[in-house]
Structures are given as structure tokens and as C-alpha cells.
Length: 332
Image: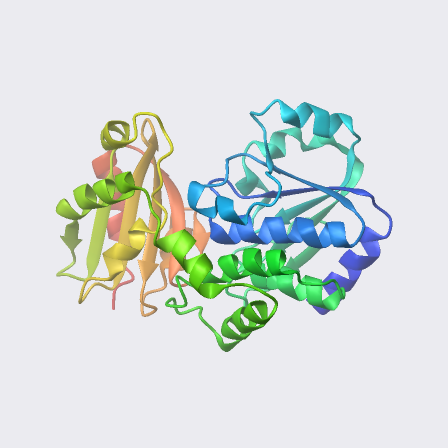
């Protein structure tokens, strides 16, 4: 990874305007890592703008020092009018398509032959782009961004440290997932030294969820499905329930899947939510004995050994049966 960062630093010398983006439905690592990378590029004297397909979830907005641009917003026109981008930096995206509708407009926003930089930590990353700074040994993309900042000799301000710490915290599941390595804990420690406040960050992300989140969680727990002799737990969120609880949008389901693996005896937890007519998104968790990344990959998804996900199409009962069958094949 050191050589890739060196190539990135050399490439930066020849560009001025840089576009950053991240995956759809951004989580804490995507938000924190992308914001921090923008700040580091600005410390390096570059003009950097973030353009995203989906907005930053409410619980991560305290990390935002300057709002990213959304494709649906009118402000995007003025950003692009200021000049075409010479480099595109993808943060926490295991493949180019993960950035959603942003991908469709890169040709309009960027100069021909714009350099593509891939900053990620997913084992399933296909190393797309001209420069791939990918380390599957890292628990989060935030750690990779931290490594970039350190190797390039850029200062880690308290704001950057806060953004990166949030990424490490959320992608390790509050330091509970099996990807909580010595390196992840060491990075967190150094970020605290740089000015991140662990108590404040944890409180803003985990202790101030809106009331409707808990109303939704209650409904889901009341209908929790237990399969495979108690070794699999599944929550299902239908489109009808989404419309009932969130009639005006703004749904927040991040972290709900974690409740499925907090039940004694459960090896694999799954959270399936409807995202459109006959379209679903499944999130998977395990304690480490079952590799849920392999389950997700069998269904054209991906992720990590203990935290993964995939998209599914079909009738709701058929989708769940297909998912459960794949889980059954991996249970010890």
C-alpha cells in the first residue's frame, strides 16, 4: 500500500480539481472517510468537492464541516461550472458501481482521462481505477485514509481525527466485530491523541437515535424469525411498514441487523428490507464462526467475514427462502 500512496502523491502534483465520492446509502465509514480525505486534499493545496448519490444520514451530520453536494441539488451546477475535475477519488467503494448515479455523470464532470483513485478496505474490492490504495487488513476505509495522511505528512486536525475515528468506530461495530484488530485500536488511540473525543462521538452516533427508530425496532423485534434450530435470526422490513412508520421518508435502519446476533445461540443474523417492487437489500452479521461474506458473494453481494450484504430480487417469501438456504449451507 505504501507504493500506491506514493503514486497517489505523485499524481496529485499534476492536478488541481478533485472530485470525491462514496457508496450509496453512506454509513459512518463512508461519511467520515470521505470528509477526512477531502480535508487532507485541501491541506495539500487542492480544490476538492464531494458529490454523492444519497444524503448524509442525520446521525453523522455532526461530522460535516462543509456539506457534500447531492446529484439532486441545484448547487451542483455551479460546482461543475467552476471547472472540470482532473481526478476522481472513490472512498469505501468495493466497485465503481457502488457509488450509484454519480457514476453516470463522471464523463460530464471530468476531463478526458481523469485519474481514478480507489481507496478502500474490502476484500472483495476488484482494484478498479488507475491507483488502488486498498488494504483488506484494515477494519475501515478511515484507517486507509489515516495511513495516506500520515505517509504524505499532512496534519491530522481535531476535525479530521473526529471524522476518521467515527469511521473506525462504526465499521468495527463499536470495537465489537471480529475485525477489531490491534491496528484498528492503535489507529483509534492515535486519533484520540489528535483530538477525537470518543465519548462525544459515541453519544452522537449511538445515543441520540430518533424515537421512530425505536418504534420501528420494536415492531421488527416483535416479528423476529428464528430458523435453523436457533442458529439463524432474521428480521424482515416490508415496504408497507416503511410507509407506515416513515410516511415522509428519512428512514434510518443502520445498526438494526446487529440486534439479530445479540441472541444467545444465534450464529448468523439477517436483516432484509424492501427497497422497491420485488427488490430487497439484505444485511448479514455473524460472530466470526460463519463467514457471511461468502454467503453474500453467493448472492452477488460482498463485504467482510462477519459483516456483509447483498441485493435480491423476487417475491418476498422466495427471497427470504433463498437467503436462508445459503445461510444453512454455511452453518457449522
